[in-house]
Length: 262
Image (cartoon, rainbow, N blue to C red):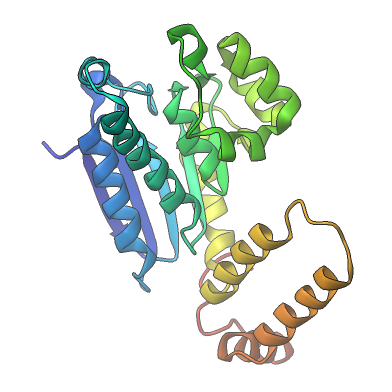
């Protein structure tokens, strides 16, 4: 049985973690599968949106116990290589030039929260639970920290990284880990609604917007940033997609890529 299910349909790649017997927990094989999948999707022009989901009762329960047992016998260099694999996989997800959505229907613990935070948008249900459980194992949430702290901020990270307490979807929404919390029977329709909006945008624009957010986030508004943003908008205005988008707006028609929400 494959540890990862990938279905591509109408411009959307649905990636489903498929280890329900261990609540979709990470091991080295699943991490490698995810990294390879993200790398392939990066260059796939037919895929415009990526949805990440989990099969079974959980989204992702963090590290697999058998994997942890193996790591317990590793030395520093082996641990470094192992940790780098997880860090590289999360970075590949974060850097995808396409919009990404986490569909969170159940528990997302430890590394699973990193997947949620590395996605652009995260939709969850009241059944979703979250925990940065590393401290209770004498560990640190190091590899997921760049994405989680960007999502929830330093203050919330200080509490939840240190206490390792479980919190619910409402709190995840309040602190920014989830973009929205919807009922279970509305989860798929809510994801589909977001997809419709995303498919109405240009794929090159999405890639440039994600690049823009990375470049602008946290920077002081100085002359260099002002000049950089002016350059970016000028470049995209004269691009083929930018010209088509403006022309379609003026001509009151959908752009060549458009089949999403008006």
